[in-house]
Length: 330
Image (tube, rainbow, N blue to C red; front, side, top):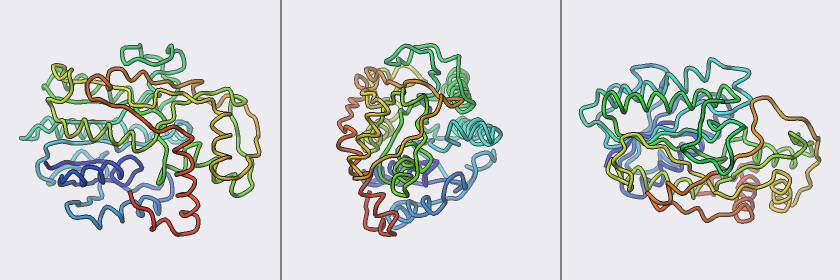
């Protein structure tokens, strides 16, 4: 099976590439290696992949409508490339237009015109639920009140996919990710930024005075779900009769932010110095995934708690700071 993975140098993308290679697939990885966060981390992830047989890397930007030209045919496309980050969307809104909406449209147009009509699995986000959806969030809840530009673009991508499914018969699965964490993660995520600040003796800013809840999901659990869907192909899942399906993919065990900070202190052996603050613009009070649909259709069953996951992340981060992360393997 030949697959394209966009965002291949990203956190989730790199893990997914490794999992697909482990299954004997041929993988083309695409990424624009932008500088939203330290490109050295992206290059380090990529280094592991480029050492593996069956992997080819292409550096291109999906905002270019011709970005996928000349890459050959694919059985499946796993589209994970996007401009992430709620706060950054307040600073650089056009980056979200280019990476998220234009990038998604580039992929849809490629699938539409490809002779093989590859099955498309793409990344959405729990942020599409906004701040008024009753928890736990269900896929059939209304998603028309985004509180950030990032959320609006991800919901826009879902709508583009829905229209292309109806117009052109494209088989697609959209995955609403819930706060993914683990080794080789994104430095802009709270767990990573908190750990870095604690190690440097800096205070961490705790928004809404700590009254927040998040459905933290371990990276290996996420990758198991993504890979299972990608390899299942167009006919995978019990709901295969629907051309465009959307699933939550999360841990289904929301954690209070203050409990999460305590668990991070225990994992790192460091003490957090807290600076309490109000709610930040674009943020939501709670995320909570109802995963009944993806469990029913694909057998998705996350197993890793923060008590298990955070110590593994802390061990990796210690090595990354010391320049010894090359000892780690995916």
